[in-house]
Amino acid sequence: MPEDEEKADLLRLTTPYRLLAGIALGTAVCVSTARLAAQEYCVSCTEPPALYRCIIEGARPGGSQPLQMLCITAMAKEGQHATCGVKGGTVFDCNGPVKRIPWAAYNEPGPGQEQTKAPAAQPPIQDPNAPPATVEEMAKRANQKSAEQAKALGQSVGDATKKTWNCIASLFTKCGE
Image (cartoon, rainbow, N blue to C red; front, side, top):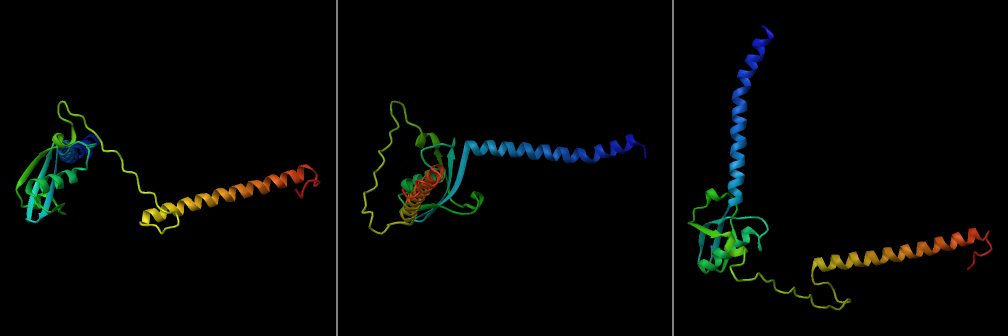
């Protein structure tokens, strides 16, 4: 078979795969673009029990709260539920009514309003001899104590090195000081 015919056969075989790859890439771009514009979660609530398909329209990263929390908070408030949470699985398995939430209404100040942050609460001052209240506090204390010990060790090694150097530099006449 001549070389030109082999190239033509190869081109005929790869063209459908190139087309499929292009379609797949285009679909991926469209889906990712659509996901930037809207984000969906299946939210399950209790007291009274309910299931919602929550769609956050115009969702963007960098809001004042995570997108899941936005849905949970909005559904709990709107339905006057005791608790709500994001249900596992896909939103396509969610059999609840669709509830749409505008992202901008929860994450950007309105006209004439300023977005204010509450001052950060200062942690209560605890007795350093009291046992730690949380695992995080225990880890922080352990890290702090390790750092203090490492600094003390570095200081004593530095002092010993300085004394040794002075002893050698004085040709062993100042070794006992």
